[in-house]
Image 1 (tube, rainbow, N blue to C red):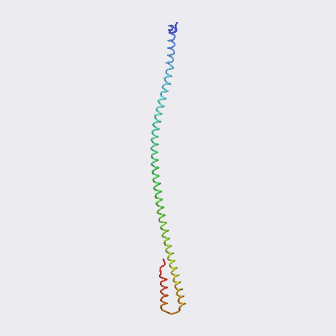
Image 2 (spheres, helix red, strand yellow):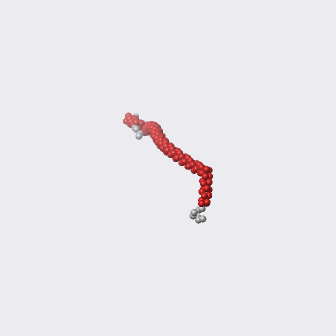
Length: 167
């Protein structure tokens, strides 16, 4: 018996054992293996389908997210523009109110100054006339002469003192 070429008997039993093993595998092994391969193939196919669904869902969500971001930016721009407009209105209103208030205060101050000026002028005129009377009285005491010139001088001085504008 050589190692390279087996005997006929050995070859016969090897074929019978191979056939029996093949029959057992074909009857119970191959269907089980085939089912497992198909199950694995179905699992992979389902996983790929789920991955595709997830990818499409992600793309949809990404598009929605981008749309929401754009809407948010537009809303932000609108709110900022409205805030800027409101700020300008408030500033303009405050400036107008301040200008009106300052004009009112300035007018009131001018009226007070004018009233004070007129009161001061009236007081000065009364003091001038009192001084004129005092001067005239002194002149009259000094010289009690009934000269018409002296009387005319006193009247003229009194009139000039009361009519003289004091600016």
